[in-house]
Length: 442
Image (cartoon, rainbow, N blue to C red; front, side):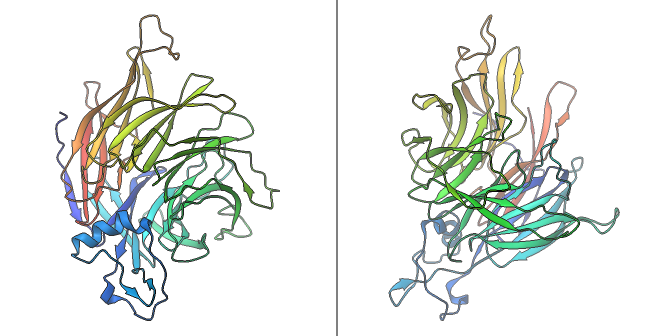
């Protein structure tokens, strides 16, 4: 069994952390999103009534159980009244040498934070603006903030630009947010009713409107029958920016749709068909999806995490090809695999192809996982190479509650002189409100 890693430093946050994201252009900085479910006695009994949602469950249930609060909604008249939620964005600085964590800013949010994502502009993009953070909330809205500083000597802070309501009702939740990998003006969002939608944005900064964002609904994707927990784009493979989008739902289904190239002249939202529907690979909800590079012209590789405690490598038919979804490798990580992210880009060596991943495994804590495919004698990296294998290299288990948010500090890592690289990790846990910093050598 992989040896347990110990924290370098830790701290207790004011509110339960639900997500975390380092800022790639400024790798010392990271933001934690928080999610607070208000006790029922704090709420105005005259509030409007609306039905509860299973999307409340995963984060709300863990907080409620810790507060010894009855997990059932209080029924007034004929319908249950949802509990009020609020949250915050907390900006920190992490010194990569000393591991000191410095609080820079706490920004209250009137609704709970479910996801945060920095916009990544490709090198070929003409967009030039400060780092942009998108926040998905429990009221179905998305908030945009930029990272600014009043002077070179002043610390950075988040500046609110705009808020946009994506749902018809504020009782609906925006669960996940994803920027398009090569079109920084396009993003996707998922919701607790199972729906998935694409939007376009105006330029974030322009001479005529330096602090204004407008959005337009441009496409609706196939829905899941329950909450859609995750959305991921494939890398674009053609010059017209067409790509695939993958979604995972609480129904245990993986859906794949082909995205057309979107043009600025498009005025009406389009409905996109399903290209692939996989109901058999997962035994519970699909909560994380990452696409991988492949040399195959007919199959694509996708990593998934699931509530069924497993990480899986799937082989899917490419657009224009037929065939079944194949599970190439899987491993039980001991807890629901809520999120997956790469520690390093996939590396091809003489020994084969390998990649390192950070896995947030809910009640089991955090895992460092290696995916490896050995090269065979005379092989050229094609489809007939060796078998794929998962291996847990390290585990972090100081968290005493659900580990939803973890991230790795950007950069190539510090080499120790023996060919090993050290990466710095920040992980969080929900109802004990714990934030930990730790190292891993790979």
